[in-house]
Length: 84
Image 1 (tube, rainbow, N blue to C red):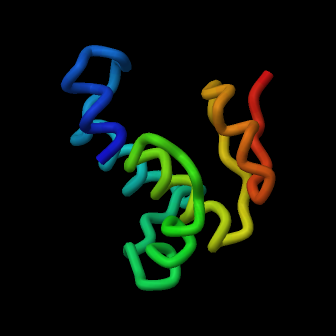
Image 2 (image 1 turned 180 degrees about the vertical axis):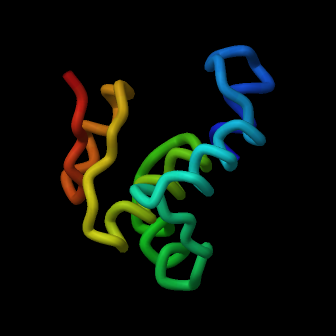
């Protein structure tokens, strides 16, 4: 949803269809279902934007870092943010 949202607003140069195609041909990506544990995790995160909150909650639930240039993610101590 975040990819779709950003693409529709011309903030990124890839659309949802292209993104899903790339995910389907690359074994390094995995689509996970939204589940009750991710929703519970999201309910405990103090973050203003819903899509980002779900991304953060998913990363926390999966125990993986996030690749993002969003400096506001740095305020969420439960998740590691990777960006150079």
